Length: 219
Length: 190
Image 1 (cartoon, one colour):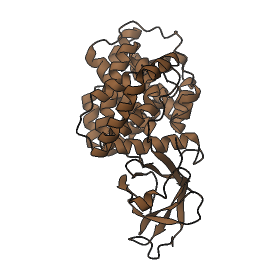
Image 2: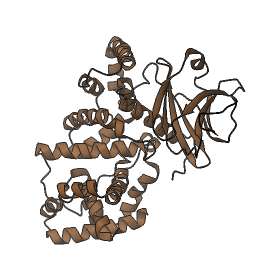
Image 3: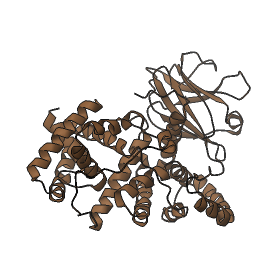
Image 4: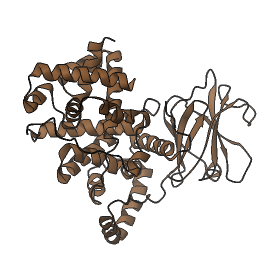
């Protein structure tokens, strides 16, 4: 890419030039769009030092504007959370107002999270929501080659390695665990990914190399 | 790309935010609340820097989180840092609102002025952009007036024409100075 084109990408990322023309170029030219994204990410670093606590009631103003047709699990938990919030709001909001540097406390049932990494760094992120028994898997850098990536859990205080099945290595996915699996997954448990033949390990044990692992923690 | 260790707080924060965004993409309200809890301080900092007034910044925050709600499905954890994605979305959405409102700052800019002292605090360092934060150091290597112009373009969404008018310099001069500064910046960042 010429300097002129790259400068145009930077100018577009900053909004210095006519947006419509540069946006059209971005839509038609993937290499240009990639440079705009590169500049976007660099300029976003300018926000790194910024941070300021908004008013405690801002979240409720946002929540009130969300569409109501979300999924059932989310809605149920939502009701539980807002009920709880209402009950403690007077005192909690007063305290928040007095101590503006304090973060909102984790909401009840906040998921536990694992960052799984291997030799090349972060490979995937997984969260587990025990209320809905839902596992959400976000691949970051995971290449299963010609086979499949299989997810394993080593429960707290155990040396057993138990399969949770093959996962999609390319795009985010989520699945509900059955009650037996759910008992194995909690803060302190370790997740691991092994490379297996297509369809997963034929033996019930990991047969290929472990390419990433990480512990589930509360965050 | 990142030098942080796998279980560092920054890496966990990034993992937690990535999966929370994926869940928001599946229309999970509790996940949006989690994203809010993890990011409202930083994103409000951005809105406040752009609008100057808390009330305006909080109005913009509502639009920002509604936009996150609608666009989280397009966030790909494999392609980028969730904080960077959120910061870019927030800045762009806030600038759109600022432009649409017609309340853009029009006061002349004195390039000799000190820019705001944007030193990081502990919390924002925790969720900082890793390598992307290099620009904070790189921009300091530019002439102070060039750094100021780039910050103004970023935080106020000014076009070349606006900048020229407010700095009271010819358009061509402003353009060539910024383009030279951008090339220097790229060299420092690459």
